[in-house]
Amino acid sequence: MLKTRIILISLTIGLIFLLYSLPKVVVENDEEAISEENSDSNSISSIKDGNAVALLPQTSNFSSADPSAISSLRQNYFNSINTEKSTIFADSLATLYAANGEYDSAVWFVDQIVPSSDWQNNYKAGSIYYQAFKNAMNAEETAAYSQEAQKYLEKALEEKPDLLAAKTRLAMIYVASPNPMQGVTMLREVLQEDPDNQEALYFMGMLSVQSGQYDKALERFKMLLELDSANHQARYLLGLSYINTGQIEEAKKQLEVLTDLDNNPEIVTAAQNLLNEMKN
Image (cartoon, rainbow, N blue to C red):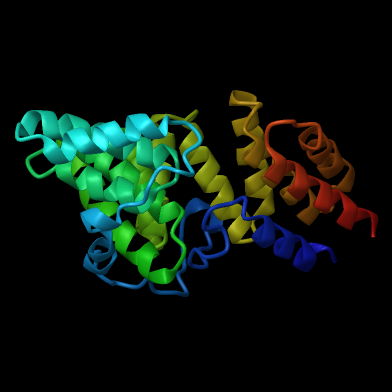
């Protein structure tokens, strides 16, 4: 069967965050989940220790921000003696660093805006730590960033319990924890309140793929693509689910759509590799 090679392709391309590093969660008829792994409980402190001001990354690799603007903001932040202005500068820097994938710097600056914060800042801090968690390069970073993301997202939800974006992201933190069922339950709650919630649909579909429940994955990704036909990762996973349910022609239809993209080379490569595997 193609399955082993397909999984290797998906891992190599790196398109689906945490898909095969999450605990083995089986959502049996959406009623139960079983975890086979534990997450590391390392503290964030060891990650932050590397974020001394002098070691904050430079801006040479930024693609969506002017390096001179970043340098100016940094200078304004470190020279400012006005707390309110410093917070504004830190907020801008956290946003820019996160947008450019410099998560070590992003989380350093986002920590400066939340000591006595409202739900908006807690949500922003939790979201940036969540992005860092998704893009962590090792187990230590994954554990540390998830710990901080959980802390801030929970604070945001204490004040704003109907904030579904925070609830969805917190759910995925829980899914990667020793208690994944808590996360699955939260994702269900989000979809009960908002059946068209695209982020929750994507995550539930992803968990269905990860646990081998491809019929459920098909249902979720088809619904998601009805809401957003440009969700290329969902289409890729839909194609993968079709392959694993033996619907090869349907899989080809989905993957061939992706090979025509001109702005997402990783997806194009992954889709083309799957198509090539089906020919072998």
